[in-house]
Length: 301
Image (cartoon, rainbow, N blue to C red; front, side, top):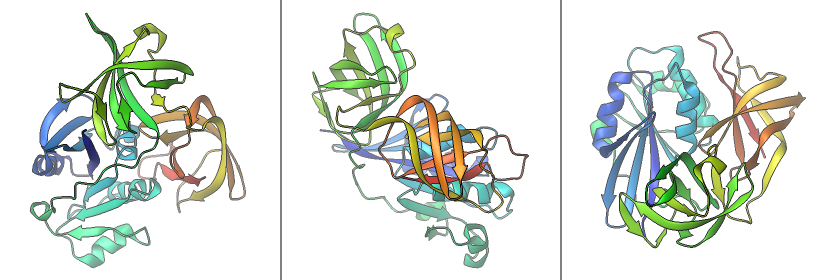
């Protein structure tokens, strides 16, 4: 059974991104987010790369929220973007944080400040062969595409964050509709089951594309799903969380939500049901002026 881990590569220097990704895997998908793979036995490493930062921070935040490892390249000429990227990694509490830079440790510390610890490597040639660890089982499958294949029916693609078997029944969000997994594909190979951290294609039984065209997740029945969330808010220095409309990032999806802040407490009100699978929710304020951090902070559940 295939299992895997997911890495996102980030930098304010777009010219460095592809070179780093190619050290880690081979390009396989070229949609909005490029996906590189490296396969070893039943282990698959997926490397995610978005090239439209800083224009589209939501796309990058979505990719990073799927990942257990972030690789941040810091160039010699520093800009506001380098600080914003460090905040993004910190706010999502990414488990493994790797910095690649030719800068000395003192300058790197000026960028990272008191943020949670990063592991530094001097050059991207020195990136270690990351251990074949498996992503944590969250009870959900992130979905990025829904489409119809002639002779197969409705197909979804995404990443598994739980063990799934053929004929298993999951709940489709935001529709709260039960669906059955008719077949599973990984890297164009049919599988009877799949574990966590793996790019998947599922054919679904007895459901039409138009019935779930805005599908976000497939979840196990025991996963907690809510539209209102309360928690402790951490607001980064020089950042602003609006009273009202903001964007929150929940396991691969940017969702517009209203946030009400009272002292250090915050209440999120979402128009769609949200699976509670992580202990932090990132808040983005994309309407600030350029040069001010759009990473407003995070809410701890």
